[in-house]
Image 1 (cartoon, one colour):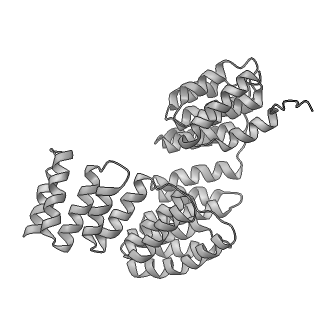
Image 2 (cartoon, one colour; image 1 turned 90 degrees about the vertical axis):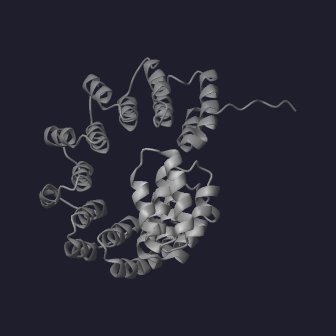
Image 3 (tube, rainbow, N blue to C red; image 1 turned 60 degrees about the vertical axis):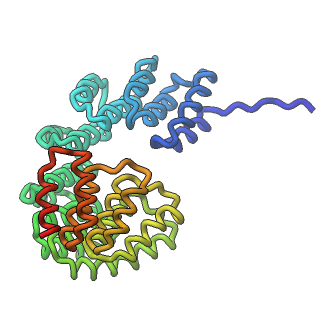
Length: 354
């Protein structure tokens, strides 16, 4: 029996490329790209757009190379390269691409708006919002979230009250704006009015309480939110790294070491998520705040990332609060080794030994 080779078609390649997201999958993505070139499918608009999306985060030159080789560029491919520039912080180049686009849709306008906001250009984001020809709910949410992140409560309220409709994203952004500006009663009122809540809205409210010193309320609401999280996991919800980091931060502010440790272990064992440097920083802060200074030192020494001065500074600050001079002296030495100009370390160490 003669076997006939079977070659993947365009749809198969698109499905695989969508799965090749993030640095961990880049090696496999490049191999797929090579196979696509051999199959003479690289210049197909949908395939090229998928390749641009794959390279967008951190490999802008490769994304540009794919885009420039396209004989025909669809709106999807233009939006993909626009997003690639913005994700890499190249906002001026992104504006050039935006102006070159032969046509634009709401995705184009929203990408530019959100990209400006995420790269710290709120004024430009606001200008895009005011001039865009058609505003969808996603457009309103983008400018509302930008206002919230900038701490512009008055503007955030104005945007929120002007919106033709709201959804969970809108309510959470407004809740965050209230909490960041220490208006916890209004934040809780918004939280209670929400017809549905997800892990983002719960952690936003918990963080609002914790960051403003209302640790008892943060702990109470956090305990309530854990039940929702457990139900969501039981229903098949898979928490992402950001969600777990928010929970770890909430545990840190509430002083709940057992729950924080449980979630950190669960993230690795149950959800197969690789902890980032920020996750380890949250665990160091969690242990330090609760007085587990030796454990915090062990995490710094054994984590799969090079310790930074801020890690040792976090431990040093915890040693000052808990009057632990021996570990504090070791932490101070490591801070000064990594950042000799950091004079605040001497002040923190003085607070430990006096």
